[in-house]
Amino acid sequence: MLEFIPDGLTLTDTVFLFAASFLGSLITAALGVGGGAFLITVMAGILPPLALVPVHGVVQLGSNASRAYLSRQYLDRQRLFWFVTGAVIAVVGGVWLVGRLDTQLIPLFIALFVLWITWLPMPMIGLGRTRVGLAIGGLITTLASFLVGASGPLVSAWLSKDAHNKWHYTALFSTAMSIQHLLKIIVFGAIGFAFSAWVPIMTGMIVLGYLGTKAGLKLLGKLPEARFRWLYRWFLTLLAVRLLVMWWHSLQVS
Image 1 (cartoon, rainbow, N blue to C red):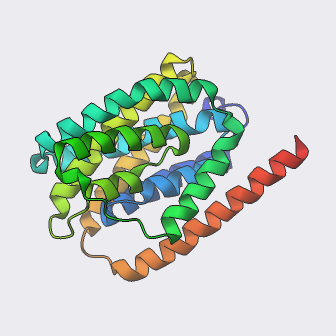
Image 2: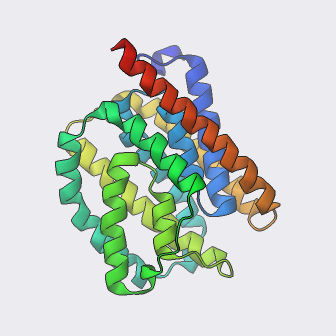
């Protein structure tokens, strides 16, 4: 089994990645958003920076695609079209950004981003109700995804989650995120990232993510949401602070 694990990772690392994929998908399916930020924060403490965003993109594509499939009858295809239009335009900027980014800064960006979305109020931008607003949202959030991987909270704010229509929101959000991750994978593949070395890890995480999605959808609307969100906020904060400490330590020893 160890021969399927990429160099630099241990069996324990792999188990943690699989567990994080399951929990991240469960959180997103049950609460509507947040699982991607949880997953990439865990991954950032395990994976090398160069592999972090592209591997996370593949895993989240699997997770979001399964959620999109399970809620497909509720999808608003017109709103999706305009969001994807902006996301496709962002690919040009993504190629430029990835080619010039210092990968050692990625863990720092992720930790600060996670602390921001955890403790500062995320405004419901509301522009997701117009065609131009959706296109701008697709453009901006896709560019952000190249830096921090988990752009879900930004996409959620742009789409303005409707608490009274959770299934329609889940369908639009998960489909938009699936396409966004797919575009990101294409860009990283085009610049030469070797996805093949990570296929076993990514496959296992996608399978566990699918199981987490099914479990989370069964819990949709049934969790004591306020308490769960409180615990989740503090746990995510600890992960982000740990990531900052690890990043600072890596600077001292490099």
